[in-house]
Length: 216
Image 1: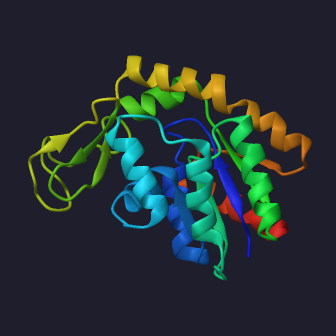
Image 2: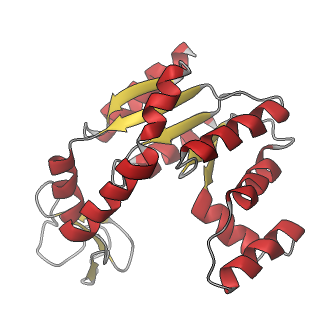
């Protein structure tokens, strides 16, 4: 079993690479957002706590998120876990480390997906999807063959995320650098950090990640 963290700013491609690891290695992606949505309707004691907090418009505490992660990893014997969106802070990193130690597991690698901010802004702000089938396109690197028409399903409803604009992305990047980027030094000091080029072609990024994991 191999447990890893994918680390990198919004738009670095963590979700894409996590899905490849799920499909190719049988790993389990633990996305904080997905876990919270699932817990909210689960009816469990922890789920009821999540629902209550979210109903009040409050932030879910680190304690609750760690509790949800513990539920997921306890007794699982698959291909390992990919932590996606957690930890985001040094305190959360300490809490995750304590949880893994308590459950007899290890963190095998933290893979930093390095990106150039200017290139990342260009990547994200040019992104759009088909509103019918979800196919992803880009103004420069992957336009539709016929303007306004999906190559896959022929749909004509193209959608851009509201926060896929330069100002919103720069704000999200600032939050990442303030709160999450200290984790790079934290895990480097623990000998867990490996870095890959997050702006390379998807197959090249996947190959670089596989090389890191195969060495562990």
